[in-house]
Length: 405
Image (cartoon, rainbow, N blue to C red; front, side):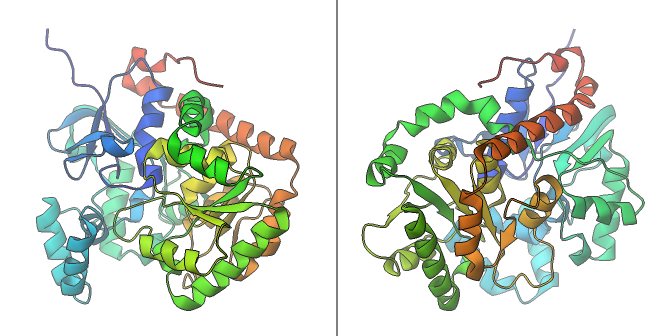
């Protein structure tokens, strides 16, 4: 008797982005009795960064799980560029960015798919009778999509056996299209429960140990995307984080949450370091998934624009301050949407760079018990959501394993 193929975990973990690298690990830990295959849009090996060896999604499968992330609104152009190395990306952007039609045609050739939102896969990718699952996905920029793009995504979602979304903005956008999707916290809220022991191990390794020794009284883990790279933003950013850290007697550890194009620019961190007094800032060199988790877990709090940097801090019951990109305008922001959905008003959500100092002061003053209570509550809610669909994978999938505490 032929053994059935394992379920496919599908997502954007074919490129270096902190949250996307986490998702397949979390799914495998939460369903330890289940074997999986790992697929994205391109074949990649990110094991050197703590990720997975990823296959390009090809053959039709019986079970496919979209593991999370901002998949519903990631266009083919964005996906294809982010799968390049930075030098290649710069050339492609210069050539195609001003011509959307040519950019879309190039992306389709590059990815080998006609899907305009390629991380959204419908039932045509499944074998007959297969199961199609969307787990805590996001799409806060739904309103930016064209009508044709929205129709493409809606067709896939309407075919799903299970769909949950991670924030109220995405939920409301889909509801307006006639699609009801329950809320589920992002899977990363489970990171401490699933990988606490591994993260503790990485706290003792060289990269994080160096930061802890540099700042024996503690530090803020800080991350800023390339959106903050202009000189005016950097000036305000440097003043804000320096005053906030100095008032609390803390150092500053700057880390990158993503090395893929359009994520975190190392030049930004070098420029920021030059704007800060010597000895007050440490450039964290590691891009390894578990080193980044350990850096945040060992900190006194996290400041940054990374949603998953914030969620890891949340999982560890730490103060956190999210930053709104300078040119965000009125467009919804995924970090704000998540915080508004799951965190109480007492916790600073997403602030401008000019509000960093008071926001950090507010976050550091929060009772530790409240922060732990938020983390514990979201773990419960994520498990309750997952319990509603794991049985679709078969009897073995429902067997839980022992998680790190």
